Image 1 (spheres, rainbow, N blue to C red):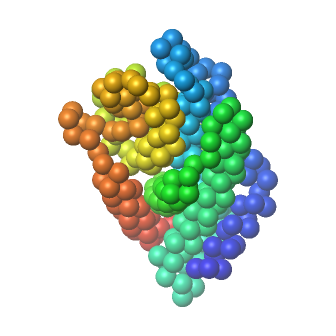
Image 2: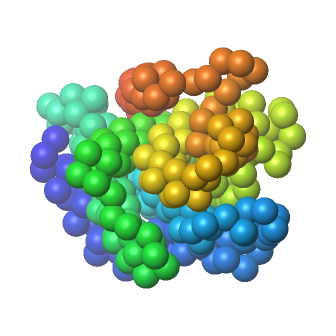
Length: 285
C-alpha cells in the first residue's frame, strides 16, 4: 500500500492544473464571503462588538479549514478516475494486493494531500488573523485543532472516495467536482450562519457528519474571541449567538456534545471506507 500511496501523491503534485484547482476552491470560498456574504455580519450590534473583525475571521477560518479537508481530497482522487480510464486499475487488481489495500492507498494518499493543502490554508488564514489583531491559539487549543483536522480529513476523504469510486470518466469526475465544490460549503454551514437558514436546512446541516468538524473547529477557534467580544453580556445572548453561528448544534433543548460529534466523524469514516471497498470490488471497477 505504501508504494501506491507514494505514487498517488507524486501524481497529484505533478498535475499542476489539478493542484491549482484544488487551491482555487478554497480561494473561491474566501472571495464569495468577502464580496457577497460579509453582510451577514451587517447587524449594527454585531459590528459594534469589541474585536468583531477577529470574531468574524475566526468563524470563517474554522469553516475554511473544515471544508478544505474535503474539497482538496476531491482533487486528489482524480487519480482513481485516471487509472480507470487508462485501465491501470486492472493491473492493480490482477496483482496479489488485496483490494482493501488498494482502496487504502487511494484514501490515505488523498488524506495526506488534504492535510498538506489544509496546512497551507491554515498558515495563510493565521497570518491574516494575526494581522487584524487576533492571537495564536494556545498549545492545548493547537493540539485540538490538529486532532479535529486529522479526523475531518480522514472522514472527508473516505466519503469522497466512495463517491469517486462510482465514476468512470473524466467528464463525470469534473461534474461531480463542480457539484461538490458548490454544495459542500453550504452543507457544512460555512457560507451563512445556520441561524438565518430555514429549520429544515438547519437540520440537514446538523445531520451532515462533515459539518461537525466545522462546529468543533469553531468551538476552539472562537472560544477566546467570543469571551472577549461578549464580556459583560448576559449568557443567554452568548448562547443565542453560538447557536446561530454554528458554534454549538442543538435539537430543541438537546445539545450535541463534542464527544457525539467526534463519534459521528469516526462512524462516517468507517462506513464510507467500507462502502468504498465494496464499490471497488464490483466487476468493471
